Image (cartoon, rainbow, N blue to C red):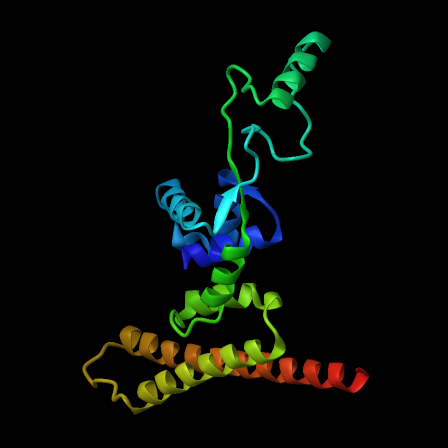
Length: 206
């Protein structure tokens, strides 16, 4: 899932490791706890496989387009700018590597996005955040697949007999889980209906 998230974010624009970590936290959620210890090995694996590459070989310490930090003097600022153009790191400043997705990475991203594994809550939520990269047909396939998974879980939850010796708090938790599945199933049905309606409207105006 981490590789899918990285490739999906890099599809939009090149990013440094720090910015990737920040956006991964936003897309995957704080419960994933993406750390540099897991992020950079994943980046190395993707780079080794040819799925991503370094976007800034000069090792600029700030994202493209960012202003050069002031050194307090015109001469110092000019020196920093010249060094950056020459690919020389400015003393005292930590360089950052920016990454971008390659054509091979784009193919891998599409494969991971439509893969038939990882249909748990987090996996589906991650794929949903990149639905804009899929065709209507591909989106409907993923939605129907999620619906089938939820239907099986709901059927099992309804068939399961809640032990009589459970205290009311545990019993309430079991009931809450069942209702949560029901609510998510309704949500997926709404998404599916909206997707079909949008496809119908596009077809009517074509």
